[in-house]
Length: 171
Ligand SMILES: [Zn+2]
Ligand SMILES: [Zn+2]
Image (cartoon, rainbow, N blue to C red; front, top):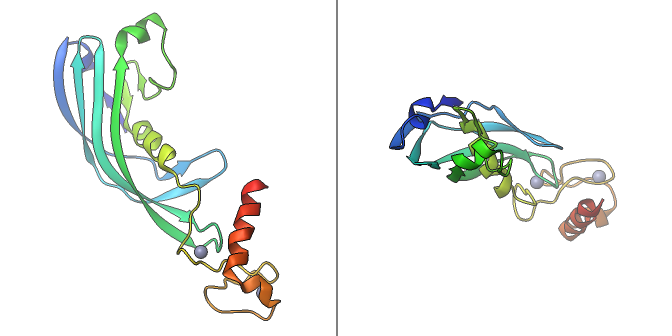
């Protein structure tokens, strides 16, 4: 959600708690989009000391992501721990890292952006529905967790699935 923090920016020293929510229904990335299956409102604390702004909060969010091997939906839980600091004088001088301030625009703070930033850095490199997921048969496409197929037995070996993962990561 977009939070107007003008009441904070106009005073030199303040600490204030806000009850905020996450509005986004999907995490959109360059090559994928993951639906949000669970989220809840959380408390965001903003502390201002002169030009120094500290933003902190904690929540948890769940996303539906496809298993890398069998493509079945997997619900992944992401603990979100927000700890951000902003130097407002740098913003005035135009001398700042765009990333550092991407969640504040004037007096509007984007809480969705704060949450997304934390999830993006925590995304797993591999998503598996279970450690020994057998994956899909490369010949007929059957989900081999649900039963075997009549294709070549070599393709049903879970070790082959692991090797297939490695090749996929390089392609
Ligand atoms: Zn799987
Ligand atoms: Zn098959």
